[in-house]
Length: 304
Image (cartoon, rainbow, N blue to C red; front, side, top):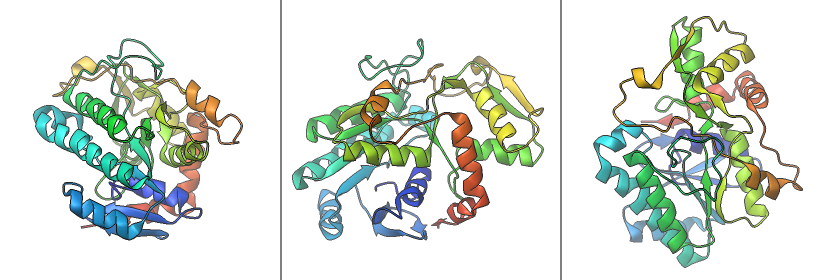
């Protein structure tokens, strides 16, 4: 897995380590996580990437490395394009040359945000540099590795010292008795990272390819997400205020509605026993992960 020291990488490894041999590609930081082996990856160098893949000989490459800070992408669009499109193309070429299965992680930011529950058939209309770079990444992956599985999603889970998710930010803020302001006019269909990992592996087993939206069943605002998360963890929600996107003064424009339809993935997984689910299920599993020590393990998984 590229981007192995990111939030998704460590959660993915923890979810799948009892079923698969997991290699996490590292770049600038170190890794210590039970059931996962680290491999230094230099995606910018085709020969170095080829040597690493030939040494590891994976059955599947999950490409999760990318530049995901939307405002940073807006300030440095060439860096966004290089990381989110050029490197994706390089990984796709390496996978195709070796006949390897490839999962390419994309985003729910690709549409204008004027309609809910976008499908795989809807034409993208990116509104910022991040989305444009991710869309180009999808296109170049499909060209170079036509059998790749391209996953559009928006995930959350326990983060580590260098990368927090929306759920970390909310829970840590509430536990510190801070007041939080969450958008009540921005909508998405989030999924727990562990559920995403299990769904993607089920899709691979079913032979799926092309673009698939792998997300939760519920469309919620960022404000509703935070309020329900607080309730699931027994925390008071009085400190969560509703806010408007227009008042935030963000550097990059964002789509107001990022919700995706998961009808296609539910159709593919219908006979497999693997389900996606909604926030109540995700929050219950997130709470169980904290109780059984996974949160602490992941917080210490990535090192300088």
